[in-house]
Image (cartoon, rainbow, N blue to C red; front, side, top):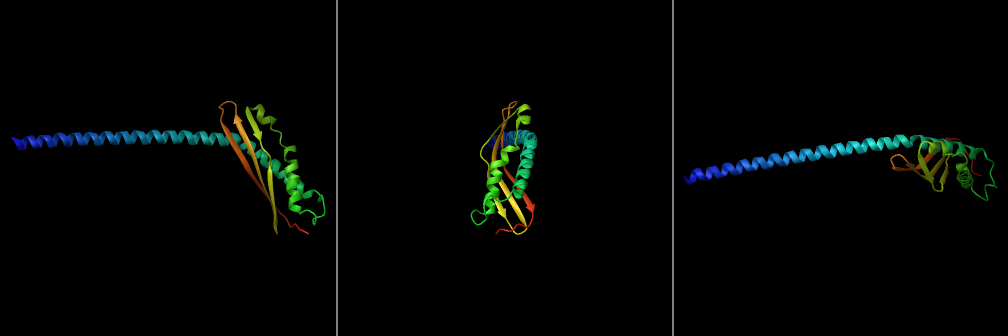
Length: 164
């Protein structure tokens, strides 16, 4: 009788073990499915945010391109030996970048836009001139109260530029 009793105890523990394993597997599957759905929603939200601010990024990039190109056509303020040309180009862009940035069209669409000071770096190379602008712009959407920051812009012009 004791052997039969031990077999029945082993059977009960075996059944309980199988039930516990099944419950754990089900909980892990539910958790993974939940995490996957949350990540998919967050990815979709992130794509929507990027898509919403892309026209503003394009607008700033186009303005940066225009102003930096205009700086190349400006005569030097001072003789190059007194102040390097890349500093003159940098200062020209920093002074004039806001002249073409009118965000009112985007603000009418429900965006709140705030910006900080632009910082420009100019690199004069043998075959090109590169402009890199760090211009922190915070874009808020009044509908969903989300905020996005764009800040890095870059343009390069193929040209031979003599530094004298």
